Image (cartoon, rainbow, N blue to C red; front, side):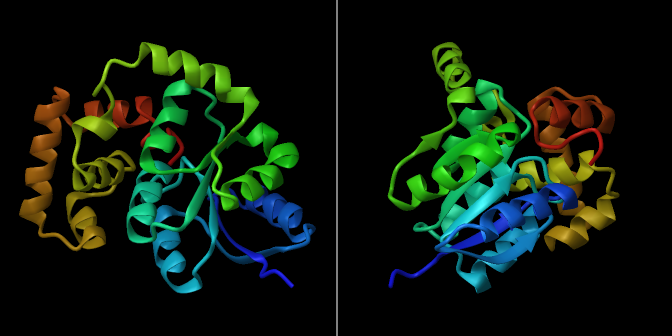
Length: 217
């Protein structure tokens, strides 16, 4: 008897997470070993629960799905990530795949495609939903190198940017990341220089535009 595919769900909306859980629990050969609502929880639980596949929402608080995917794949090279998002833009698909995801589909396609996507990535394939494939190809043709935050910034700068954009005070950001307050100030100055920002409001707008966070985060 084959071992079940161990799954971790990373999704901050409870209703969506419950719907995904119900969908996957109904499948033979699947074992949902955990559910989390933000990227940092995903990193912690992946280390202890040893999932084969993480179903990853992109817009999550604390640490977004793209940066979480990057860190997960680096720490667990054999782990597969399937990106699941409201975003259907080609640029966002590219960011997720570049971070190391093996699959991507919009949430509107989850009920029809998620099971197939999971099985495909476990077999070593890449799965991109037909709903976003055309957008991905357009984005690849238009790509001009390092225009996004994920190319301009360091890993730590992206983490600081998201937390600042979500309204956390500098002291809180320092506590969450295990940094000193002066170090966070330095990262903020680097962010403003690299992004041409005049203040935190500009950083917030940039983070929202780049999909690092969302207005409701």
